[in-house]
Amino acid sequence: MEKNITCIVCPVGCRLTVKKNEDKTYTVTGNTCKRGEKYGVEEMTAPKRMVTSTVKIKDGALRLVPVKTSDSIPKELIFELMELLDDVEIEAPVMVGDIIVENVLGTGINIVASRDMCKVS
Amino acid sequence: MKYDVVVVGGGPAGLGAAVEAKKHGANKVLIIERDRELGGILNQCIHNGFGLHEFKEELTGPEYANRFIKMVEENDIDYMLNTMVLSIEDKKIIALGEKGLIDIEAIAIVLAMGCRERTRGAIDLAGYRPAGVYTAGAAQRFMNMEGYMVGKKVVIYGSGDIGLIMARRMTLEGAKVEAVVEVNPHSSGLTRNIVQCLDDFDIPLLLQHGITYVHGKDRVTGVTISKLDSNRNPIEGTDREIECDTVLLSVGLIPENELSSDTGVELHNTTKGPVVNNKMQTNVDGVFACGNVVHVHDLVDFVTKESRIAGRNAALYVLNKIENNETVETEAGDGIGYIVPQQIDTKLGEEVNLFMRVRNIYSNRKLVVRDGDEIILQKKRPHMIPSEMENLKLSAELIKNLKGNISVCVEEA
Ligand SMILES: Cc1cc2nc3c(=O)[nH]c(=O)nc-3n(C[C@H](O)[C@H](O)[C@H](O)COP(=O)(O)OP(=O)(O)OC[C@H]3O[C@@H](n4cnc5c(N)ncnc54)[C@H](O)[C@@H]3O)c2cc1C
Ligand code: SF4
Image (tube, rainbow over all chains, first blue to last red; front, side, top):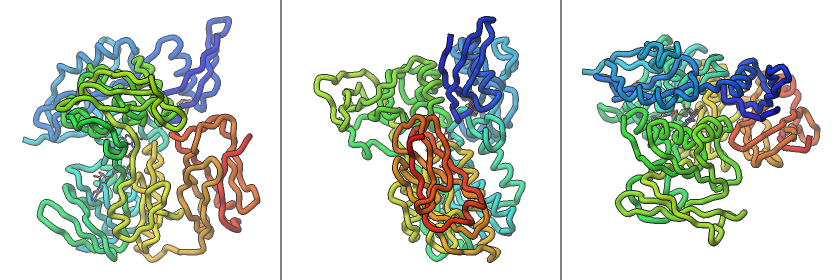
């Protein structure tokens, strides 16, 4: 079995061909770097995505602060994660990389802040 | 106030240029930004995908901006926020800030004002003017920075990257995106964004379709869409109505150049940005430009590359070390929409990156560079599309030996 997919790991967007071998392993071609190979196999077995969103912040310069998953999470958890983030509210100040939610949904992955925001009273 | 280098605009282009100017010997560097913070459009682009070339890491927009803001602070570069540059004449800048009008004298100026989105007026959308029609970027700012949800049932017009990214963002926030409607036979966004923003959420992309009417008087209630023929005229009998409360427009960006043209900077017909050479110099002495003000980039990493060249040469200009020699022109040949830079100083002794866009979708072709009639470089390209910028490196050796104008064409491989 062969499948053509677009690598979405970086904006280059290489066109990958993933082939399932007799021994259940996969061969990826068309990738320009190692990350593409890993993505190709994962997309066929257990697709994952990075999620970026915002959470509410008290006393910040803006009403929201952007956050992201520290690594990609299983695709089927995305909406559950979004629901969880709805109820999160933090207090300024916050710095890039600060952990906002630890081990989210038991994935071992953290939700971290993706910008600095100082406190304004 | 007197400065060596004044940078207009505090987006990634301006930040990169300022840091580089400082590093190359400009003593007093100032950035003027009309917004309340530095970072430009990146502050609202909270998704990931930035910085892979530049930092070998995948960052979000605010994280990418943050790295450059830190460099600006470490390098002791001055900046003014909430301040808009109104005019530039003979290196005299007039800006309007919180305390009123400010006069600033500069030796060199870097234009880095970015671009703006095309609006409803630009595409003549028929119908009343109900609430609920936004440009995708405005909606992005509302949702990601100000904390307002802009709608529940959405149709997106145009498949530019910002529209695609907003299709995902709004879906994640609980809205239903009914469709992305695109007049061209191909998407105008990056393929990876079609995959992860539309396919992932089963959002239909309707190619060769147009919105022919926006319904609703106070608030959008729906749109009529039709299939288009090859001349972009609606095909009779193909129209149908889609109910929605919001229309997002993602129909292109235009470099922001009122200021530049008032200053006497020559603009290019296709790019709508300043005509520049490989030093990112414009036709006005001491005025440089970089980033989206020159041409619309799809990757911020390339903006940074360009801004370094502009910043360094602005510093060299201040130090009186810039040389201006004979230049040759670059010409967009068959299949190529435009090339930046438009001029190359052949004595500079540096490699040159040609940035260009193809006019159509091409498979298994090659890009051919000619010096007059002689082929000096050709590169195979399995796949090229207009939405993904192509880039060709001409080595210092090649540049040194150029005899005349060079052209780039798309040809059969
Ligand atoms: C809505 C939108 C979303 C985008 N999303 C992405 C994306 O997801 N990924 C990507 O790689 N690229 C994206 N782009 C392209 C993006 O513009 C570039 O990657 C990059 O941000 C361009 O940098 P810049 O510094 O040239 O422009 P900008 O980031 O636009 O910065 C220009 C700055 O100049 C300031 N300015 C303008 N005029 C004046 C004046 N007269 N006086 C003072 N200040 C002034 C503006 O306020 C702004 O801060 C997007 C563009 C837009 C418009
Ligand atoms: S294979 Fe590597 S270079 Fe190509 S899109 Fe994937 S991550 Fe980017």
